[in-house]
Amino acid sequence: MTVVTIKDVAARAGVSPKTVSRVINGEAHVRADKREQVLRVVRELDYRPNAFARSLSSSRSYLLGFLTDDPSSGYAADVQLGALKRCRERSYHLLVEPIDRSDPHWARELAGTLGTLRLDGVMLTPPLCDDPKVLEVIEAADLPYVRISPSGEEDRSGYVRMDDQAAAAEMTRHLIARGHKRIGFLKGDPAHSASRKRFAGFVEAMIAAHLPIDPKIVLEGDFSVRSGVELGEKLLSAPDRPTAVFASNDDMALGVLMVAMKHHLTVPDDLAIGGFDDAPTSRLAWPQLSTIHQPMAAMAAAAVDMLTDPYYRQAESSVSFRRSLDYQLKVRGSTVPDA
Image (tube, rainbow, N blue to C red; front, top):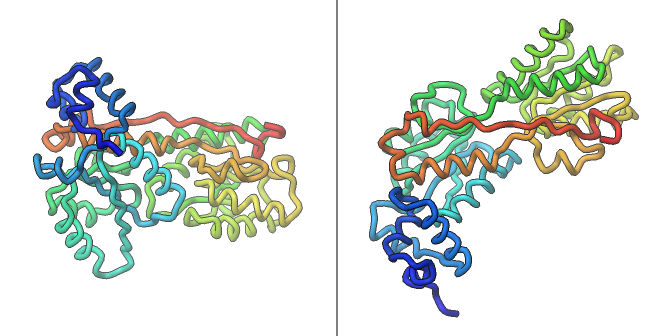
Protein backbone atom coordinates (compact mmCIF):
# COMPACT_ATOMS: atom_id res chain seq x y z
CA MET A 1 0.00 0.00 0.00
CA THR A 2 1.39 3.39 -1.01
CA VAL A 3 1.91 5.80 1.88
CA VAL A 4 0.39 9.22 1.24
CA THR A 5 2.78 12.07 2.09
CA ILE A 6 2.29 15.73 2.84
CA LYS A 7 3.72 16.48 -0.63
CA ASP A 8 0.98 14.36 -2.22
CA VAL A 9 -1.68 16.37 -0.37
CA ALA A 10 -0.03 19.66 -1.35
CA ALA A 11 0.16 18.67 -5.02
CA ARG A 12 -3.49 17.57 -5.16
CA ALA A 13 -4.67 20.71 -3.31
CA GLY A 14 -2.47 23.05 -5.35
CA VAL A 15 -0.76 24.55 -2.31
CA SER A 16 2.64 24.33 -0.67
CA PRO A 17 3.53 21.62 1.87
CA LYS A 18 3.93 24.44 4.41
CA THR A 19 0.29 25.43 3.90
CA VAL A 20 -0.80 21.80 4.40
CA SER A 21 1.24 21.70 7.61
CA ARG A 22 -0.39 24.89 8.89
CA VAL A 23 -3.88 23.55 8.21
CA ILE A 24 -3.18 20.20 9.89
CA ASN A 25 -1.65 21.90 12.92
CA GLY A 26 -4.61 24.26 13.28
CA GLU A 27 -2.50 27.36 12.75
CA ALA A 28 -3.89 30.72 11.73
CA HIS A 29 -3.04 32.77 8.62
CA VAL A 30 -4.59 30.32 6.15
CA ARG A 31 -7.50 31.55 4.01
CA ALA A 32 -10.77 29.77 4.70
CA ASP A 33 -11.12 28.50 1.11
CA LYS A 34 -7.55 27.13 1.14
CA ARG A 35 -8.12 25.48 4.51
CA GLU A 36 -11.27 23.75 3.29
CA GLN A 37 -9.53 22.70 0.08
CA VAL A 38 -6.66 21.10 2.01
CA LEU A 39 -9.02 19.34 4.46
CA ARG A 40 -11.04 17.96 1.55
CA VAL A 41 -7.91 16.48 -0.04
CA VAL A 42 -6.78 15.09 3.34
CA ARG A 43 -10.10 13.24 3.57
CA GLU A 44 -9.98 12.09 -0.06
CA LEU A 45 -6.45 10.69 0.25
CA ASP A 46 -6.98 9.48 3.82
CA TYR A 47 -3.76 11.24 4.77
CA ARG A 48 -2.43 10.32 8.25
CA PRO A 49 0.39 12.55 9.50
CA ASN A 50 3.24 10.80 11.31
CA ALA A 51 2.62 11.84 14.91
CA PHE A 52 6.18 11.03 16.03
CA ALA A 53 7.75 13.08 13.23
CA ARG A 54 5.38 15.97 13.90
CA SER A 55 6.23 16.02 17.60
CA LEU A 56 9.97 16.01 16.84
CA SER A 57 9.67 18.95 14.48
CA SER A 58 7.65 21.10 16.87
CA SER A 59 7.05 21.76 20.54
CA ARG A 60 3.75 19.82 20.41
CA SER A 61 3.07 16.15 21.10
CA TYR A 62 -0.33 16.15 19.30
CA LEU A 63 -1.71 14.29 22.30
CA LEU A 64 -4.62 15.56 24.44
CA GLY A 65 -5.81 14.14 27.74
CA PHE A 66 -9.36 13.58 29.01
CA LEU A 67 -9.57 13.27 32.80
CA THR A 68 -12.66 11.53 34.19
CA ASP A 69 -13.76 10.01 37.48
CA ASP A 70 -16.20 7.59 35.79
CA PRO A 71 -14.95 6.40 32.38
CA SER A 72 -17.75 3.81 32.06
CA SER A 73 -20.63 6.30 32.31
CA GLY A 74 -22.70 7.26 29.29
CA TYR A 75 -21.83 10.91 29.91
CA ALA A 76 -18.08 10.21 29.75
CA ALA A 77 -18.56 8.00 26.69
CA ASP A 78 -20.36 10.80 24.82
CA VAL A 79 -17.58 13.26 25.68
CA GLN A 80 -14.94 10.76 24.64
CA LEU A 81 -16.58 10.03 21.28
CA GLY A 82 -17.00 13.73 20.47
CA ALA A 83 -13.40 14.44 21.44
CA LEU A 84 -12.06 11.47 19.48
CA LYS A 85 -13.86 12.55 16.31
CA ARG A 86 -12.54 16.11 16.50
CA CYS A 87 -9.04 14.91 17.43
CA ARG A 88 -9.03 12.73 14.32
CA GLU A 89 -10.06 15.69 12.19
CA ARG A 90 -7.19 17.73 13.64
CA SER A 91 -4.69 14.82 13.50
CA TYR A 92 -4.41 14.61 17.29
CA HIS A 93 -4.66 11.61 19.61
CA LEU A 94 -6.72 11.36 22.80
CA LEU A 95 -5.63 9.74 26.05
CA VAL A 96 -8.36 8.90 28.62
CA GLU A 97 -7.03 9.03 32.18
CA PRO A 98 -9.33 7.80 35.02
CA ILE A 99 -8.97 9.62 38.36
CA ASP A 100 -9.98 7.74 41.53
CA ARG A 101 -10.20 10.36 44.26
CA SER A 102 -10.97 7.70 46.88
CA ASP A 103 -7.31 6.70 46.60
CA PRO A 104 -5.36 8.78 49.18
CA HIS A 105 -2.45 9.06 46.72
CA TRP A 106 -4.48 10.15 43.68
CA ALA A 107 -3.05 13.69 43.53
CA ARG A 108 0.54 12.44 43.60
CA GLU A 109 -0.20 9.82 40.96
CA LEU A 110 -1.93 12.39 38.73
CA ALA A 111 1.04 14.75 39.07
CA GLY A 112 3.38 11.90 38.12
CA THR A 113 1.25 10.94 35.12
CA LEU A 114 1.08 14.51 33.83
CA GLY A 115 4.81 14.89 34.39
CA THR A 116 5.58 11.74 32.41
CA LEU A 117 3.20 12.29 29.51
CA ARG A 118 3.90 15.06 27.07
CA LEU A 119 0.34 16.33 26.71
CA ASP A 120 -0.58 19.45 24.77
CA GLY A 121 -3.54 20.00 27.09
CA VAL A 122 -6.35 18.32 29.00
CA MET A 123 -10.13 18.53 29.17
CA LEU A 124 -12.21 17.58 32.19
CA THR A 125 -15.85 17.27 33.19
CA PRO A 126 -17.75 17.54 36.50
CA PRO A 127 -17.01 16.88 39.25
CA LEU A 128 -13.27 16.95 38.45
CA CYS A 129 -13.52 20.32 36.71
CA ASP A 130 -14.80 21.83 39.98
CA ASP A 131 -12.23 20.19 42.26
CA PRO A 132 -9.64 22.79 43.36
CA LYS A 133 -7.00 20.11 44.02
CA VAL A 134 -7.35 18.65 40.52
CA LEU A 135 -6.96 22.11 38.99
CA GLU A 136 -3.96 22.85 41.20
CA VAL A 137 -2.19 19.67 40.02
CA ILE A 138 -2.85 20.53 36.35
CA GLU A 139 -1.70 24.11 36.80
CA ALA A 140 1.44 22.98 38.63
CA ALA A 141 2.25 20.86 35.55
CA ASP A 142 1.87 24.04 33.45
CA LEU A 143 -0.73 22.41 31.20
CA PRO A 144 -3.50 24.25 29.34
CA TYR A 145 -6.93 22.84 30.21
CA VAL A 146 -10.56 23.31 29.21
CA ARG A 147 -13.46 22.57 31.55
CA ILE A 148 -16.78 21.20 30.34
CA SER A 149 -19.74 22.49 32.39
CA PRO A 150 -17.86 24.07 35.31
CA SER A 151 -19.78 25.59 38.22
CA GLY A 152 -17.67 28.72 38.74
CA GLU A 153 -14.31 30.49 38.50
CA GLU A 154 -15.02 31.38 34.88
CA ASP A 155 -11.78 33.35 34.49
CA ARG A 156 -9.62 30.39 35.54
CA SER A 157 -9.65 28.65 32.14
CA GLY A 158 -11.53 28.26 28.91
CA TYR A 159 -14.82 26.38 29.20
CA VAL A 160 -17.77 24.95 27.31
CA ARG A 161 -21.19 24.66 28.90
CA MET A 162 -24.93 24.66 28.45
CA ASP A 163 -27.59 26.17 30.71
CA ASP A 164 -28.63 23.22 32.91
CA GLN A 165 -30.97 25.33 35.02
CA ALA A 166 -32.91 26.70 32.04
CA ALA A 167 -33.10 23.21 30.51
CA ALA A 168 -34.45 21.67 33.73
CA ALA A 169 -37.01 24.46 34.00
CA GLU A 170 -38.18 23.70 30.46
CA MET A 171 -38.64 20.00 31.21
CA THR A 172 -40.59 20.89 34.36
CA ARG A 173 -42.82 23.29 32.40
CA HIS A 174 -43.45 20.49 29.89
CA LEU A 175 -44.69 18.21 32.68
CA ILE A 176 -46.84 20.99 34.13
CA ALA A 177 -48.33 21.68 30.69
CA ARG A 178 -49.35 18.01 30.55
CA GLY A 179 -51.51 18.67 33.64
CA HIS A 180 -49.19 17.36 36.35
CA LYS A 181 -49.23 19.17 39.68
CA ARG A 182 -47.62 16.62 42.00
CA ILE A 183 -44.17 16.16 40.47
CA GLY A 184 -41.37 14.23 42.12
CA PHE A 185 -37.74 15.13 41.54
CA LEU A 186 -34.62 12.95 41.79
CA LYS A 187 -31.43 14.90 42.45
CA GLY A 188 -28.10 13.67 41.13
CA ASP A 189 -24.72 13.32 42.80
CA PRO A 190 -24.33 16.33 45.14
CA ALA A 191 -20.66 16.60 44.09
CA HIS A 192 -21.77 17.55 40.56
CA SER A 193 -22.60 21.21 39.99
CA ALA A 194 -25.16 20.07 37.38
CA SER A 195 -27.20 18.45 40.17
CA ARG A 196 -27.68 21.79 41.91
CA LYS A 197 -28.46 23.63 38.67
CA ARG A 198 -31.03 21.08 37.52
CA PHE A 199 -32.81 21.12 40.86
CA ALA A 200 -32.78 24.94 40.77
CA GLY A 201 -34.47 24.82 37.36
CA PHE A 202 -37.14 22.46 38.70
CA VAL A 203 -37.81 24.76 41.67
CA GLU A 204 -37.90 27.83 39.42
CA ALA A 205 -40.59 26.35 37.16
CA MET A 206 -42.69 24.98 40.05
CA ILE A 207 -42.69 28.34 41.84
CA ALA A 208 -43.55 30.19 38.62
CA ALA A 209 -46.55 27.87 38.20
CA HIS A 210 -47.57 28.37 41.88
CA LEU A 211 -47.26 24.64 42.53
CA PRO A 212 -46.11 23.19 45.87
CA ILE A 213 -42.81 21.31 46.15
CA ASP A 214 -43.31 18.38 48.52
CA PRO A 215 -39.97 17.50 50.17
CA LYS A 216 -41.19 13.89 50.62
CA ILE A 217 -40.99 13.38 46.85
CA VAL A 218 -37.70 15.22 46.30
CA LEU A 219 -34.99 12.61 46.85
CA GLU A 220 -31.22 12.55 46.35
CA GLY A 221 -29.52 9.93 44.16
CA ASP A 222 -26.14 9.58 42.49
CA PHE A 223 -26.94 9.52 38.74
CA SER A 224 -26.91 5.67 38.61
CA VAL A 225 -29.68 3.33 37.43
CA ARG A 226 -29.45 1.62 40.81
CA SER A 227 -30.29 4.83 42.67
CA GLY A 228 -33.16 5.45 40.24
CA VAL A 229 -34.58 2.04 41.13
CA GLU A 230 -34.15 2.55 44.89
CA LEU A 231 -35.64 6.05 44.91
CA GLY A 232 -38.35 5.09 42.43
CA GLU A 233 -39.45 2.35 44.80
CA LYS A 234 -39.79 4.88 47.61
CA LEU A 235 -41.81 7.26 45.44
CA LEU A 236 -44.11 4.74 43.83
CA SER A 237 -44.77 2.67 46.96
CA ALA A 238 -46.18 5.69 48.81
CA PRO A 239 -49.97 6.06 48.99
CA ASP A 240 -49.71 9.64 47.72
CA ARG A 241 -47.27 8.93 44.91
CA PRO A 242 -46.50 11.65 42.32
CA THR A 243 -48.14 11.62 38.90
CA ALA A 244 -44.84 12.59 37.27
CA VAL A 245 -41.16 12.15 38.11
CA PHE A 246 -38.33 14.28 36.75
CA ALA A 247 -34.96 12.57 37.22
CA SER A 248 -31.71 14.53 36.95
CA ASN A 249 -30.34 12.15 34.33
CA ASP A 250 -31.52 9.39 32.03
CA ASP A 251 -30.00 6.54 34.03
CA MET A 252 -32.06 7.41 37.10
CA ALA A 253 -35.13 7.95 34.90
CA LEU A 254 -34.66 4.44 33.52
CA GLY A 255 -34.54 3.12 37.08
CA VAL A 256 -37.90 4.76 37.79
CA LEU A 257 -39.31 3.29 34.57
CA MET A 258 -38.32 -0.21 35.74
CA VAL A 259 -40.08 0.33 39.07
CA ALA A 260 -43.19 1.65 37.29
CA MET A 261 -43.38 -1.59 35.32
CA LYS A 262 -42.95 -3.61 38.52
CA HIS A 263 -45.92 -1.75 40.03
CA HIS A 264 -47.98 -2.29 36.85
CA LEU A 265 -48.18 1.45 36.18
CA THR A 266 -48.74 2.54 32.59
CA VAL A 267 -46.29 5.18 31.37
CA PRO A 268 -47.22 7.95 30.69
CA ASP A 269 -50.93 7.53 31.58
CA ASP A 270 -50.40 6.54 35.23
CA LEU A 271 -46.94 8.08 35.59
CA ALA A 272 -44.99 10.48 33.37
CA ILE A 273 -41.18 10.27 33.52
CA GLY A 274 -38.67 12.88 32.34
CA GLY A 275 -34.90 12.51 32.15
CA PHE A 276 -31.86 14.58 31.25
CA ASP A 277 -28.86 14.13 28.88
CA ASP A 278 -30.45 12.23 25.95
CA ALA A 279 -28.19 9.22 26.47
CA PRO A 280 -28.48 6.42 23.86
CA THR A 281 -30.38 4.31 26.42
CA SER A 282 -33.15 6.94 26.52
CA ARG A 283 -34.12 5.86 22.99
CA LEU A 284 -33.76 2.13 23.69
CA ALA A 285 -36.29 2.14 26.55
CA TRP A 286 -39.97 1.54 26.01
CA PRO A 287 -41.62 3.90 26.02
CA GLN A 288 -38.72 6.08 24.93
CA LEU A 289 -37.74 8.72 27.48
CA SER A 290 -38.59 12.37 27.16
CA THR A 291 -35.35 14.10 28.02
CA ILE A 292 -33.10 17.12 27.56
CA HIS A 293 -30.61 16.71 24.75
CA GLN A 294 -27.25 17.86 26.02
CA PRO A 295 -24.83 18.41 23.10
CA MET A 296 -21.96 16.48 24.70
CA ALA A 297 -20.20 15.58 21.43
CA ALA A 298 -20.32 19.21 20.30
CA MET A 299 -19.09 20.42 23.69
CA ALA A 300 -16.17 17.99 23.56
CA ALA A 301 -15.34 19.05 20.01
CA ALA A 302 -15.35 22.69 21.10
CA ALA A 303 -12.97 21.83 23.94
CA VAL A 304 -10.59 20.17 21.46
CA ASP A 305 -10.81 23.23 19.21
CA MET A 306 -9.71 25.44 22.10
CA LEU A 307 -6.81 23.22 23.17
CA THR A 308 -5.51 22.91 19.61
CA ASP A 309 -5.76 26.64 18.96
CA PRO A 310 -2.18 28.02 18.87
CA TYR A 311 -3.29 31.13 20.79
CA TYR A 312 -5.13 29.32 23.61
CA ARG A 313 -2.28 29.19 26.12
CA GLN A 314 -1.72 32.94 25.81
CA ALA A 315 -5.39 33.84 26.16
CA GLU A 316 -7.15 31.14 28.19
CA SER A 317 -9.48 33.61 29.89
CA SER A 318 -10.45 35.57 26.78
CA VAL A 319 -14.10 35.67 25.73
CA SER A 320 -13.30 33.72 22.54
CA PHE A 321 -12.52 30.67 24.68
CA ARG A 322 -15.85 30.59 26.53
CA ARG A 323 -18.73 28.90 24.77
CA SER A 324 -22.33 28.16 25.68
CA LEU A 325 -24.19 25.64 23.50
CA ASP A 326 -27.93 25.15 23.14
CA TYR A 327 -29.94 22.31 24.67
CA GLN A 328 -33.12 20.78 23.24
CA LEU A 329 -36.21 19.30 24.86
CA LYS A 330 -36.91 15.87 23.32
CA VAL A 331 -40.57 14.91 23.85
CA ARG A 332 -41.14 11.16 23.64
CA GLY A 333 -43.51 8.48 24.85
CA SER A 334 -42.64 8.62 28.57
CA THR A 335 -44.52 11.92 28.94
CA VAL A 336 -46.84 12.08 25.91
CA PRO A 337 -48.84 9.07 24.63
CA ASP A 338 -47.83 7.95 21.13
CA ALA A 339 -45.11 10.63 20.95
